[in-house]
Image (cartoon, rainbow, N blue to C red):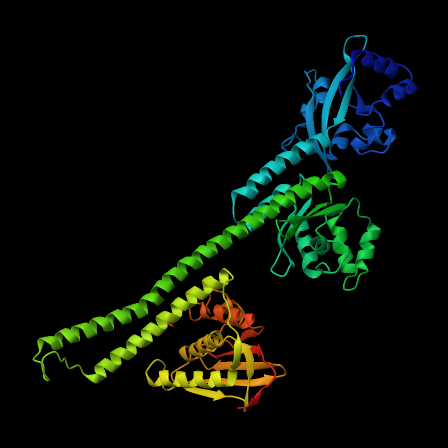
Length: 585
């Protein structure tokens, strides 16, 4: 504020006249006004100036010299750099220098509260034309400057959040940026896979106080079912704030089970004044929460602060989701590339076998053609053993190629919802018996190691159901094939079935490479295999089990995997609903 010339004359007259006249003039002014004499002593302050100066009365002000008064404050310019006391407008006038209005940012050392003020000063000249007094005015512009800082912060935070796909590092930078513009403490929590908050950023200017906050979190984590706080905001998706935190509220909080005096002592050390928690709402879910806390600054949140916090939290949520989408896309590309490389290898292997034996047979026939025919013209003699071996290898390779192609086609049908079943009445006992006989024949022909024992245990009744026989045969053949493929040469594979109420339980278990515990579900996803077999040389590219699960679930059943871990075998259990009317086997 700038005092007009006529007001200066009134002030001068009041100073030279009655105290009541001075009070009457300055009590009407909402800005702080102080008056100094030629020695720099504060001889007057209007009611608005007293709280700005941190005193309760004019008498208390009169008991302090100016240096003692100023020592209560840390003076800064708008950017937070030190502001020399000699540059204050009132000091310059007393030194006979020209004084222009200055924006001063000051922090109350006792409380840490920060304010902005536009300070101006004008002399009151006496009869000799000298400045007998200096009148200083203090116009509080804290709200305006904080609005400017908030807008600047949101712009910078937006740039940070859009500049990187490493959202954890970015949100830590945003938390540091928010202090002290929006908070004394800034906390960011991100939800994990089950919706629980995971703290990724906590910031405060004072490392000691930051340590207190982290100790409180470690020793007394928030209650999940509390009707307030981060968990509540994550459940409801509604922001909450408390304008003023009283000591009585802290005491009531400390009375909760599992807390007590140590909890209350930590809370009081934090000097909490007010807080605001905004949910980080994404496109389809709540990805986290942003907590802003005022403490030693003495500031308090109001309803008007909610839109700013919510805007920041939404931008943060977008940054998290964008990073997740990017990572998912990158993982998809990596999976695709890995699948294409592996599928190419898997498909080329049987093709190479077929081509190799076809070329070998062609060369053998050409060789025999060049030799004199032993049994007459047009007859070529080729050893039966060599033909049988070639035929066996060709058959094995084409069977493998057919399975790979069928799995590819089935995955495509599943993804497009076109995997169809043709149901008919099927005897599951007979199907498993026939499958075991077929596998044993393939063992004798060299497809599987003959040293692996295949054990079959079936109930003495026919197990009847309405199923697609070709699809179910595909499921059990795939499971048995995997068990044999991953078994050691002298191992055993056990297939057994039992009735459990209106369901049949079929179990295929082996003594092979096993499955890591954290991948018992993953292996049923398309293009997924256990990490211990990806690069082990075992054929396959992670589609068979995905197809099996889809077929079983389409029949109203379930399939699950169990394993004691890598190298300790695996068990696959299939449950299928059976029809009434099981009979003797």
